Image 1 (cartoon, helix red, strand yellow):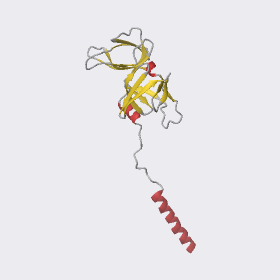
Image 2 (image 1 turned 135 degrees about the vertical axis):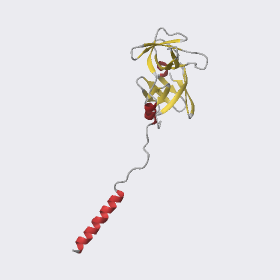
Image 3 (image 1 turned 90 degrees about the vertical axis):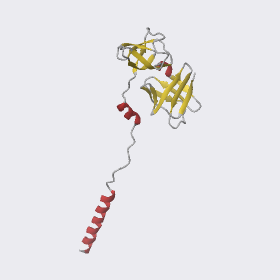
Image 4 (image 1 turned 90 degrees about the horizontal axis):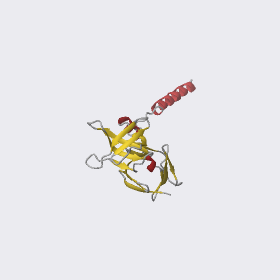
Length: 189
């Protein structure tokens, strides 16, 4: 009888112990993807397409991925000046952020030449290739956090989860800016 009493006490202690420590809820805030939250709050307003033959200094003809042909006005002075990075060349892929004014004209706020953006870029600590299809290939094996993906989102360049403003893009130079500073890259041949 005494053994049964010890077994009952032992089982009660085990049940109490398990109930105190077994079902802990995690009160820590879960880390969320800031890009996913941003995409939900602000949908991508970028229009993608190919630069058309009718493009001139102040007019951009865009053959969109959806099959439409849009004509954007490219302003070069004043408070609504358009920022064109990478140049405008017929046949190049472009990402355009713009709006429609009171006269129902399409105005380009920012134009990014995706064809010029793609290629091999290097700096003191980075050596990577921006490829078609959103792929970034790192050419440094020892890099701890290499960029592996890219996309344009509302006129900004996203490399993995890093968001950059494209300040300049030429045939041989790329200038990216974020909260940490301005990053300069040159094209690798």
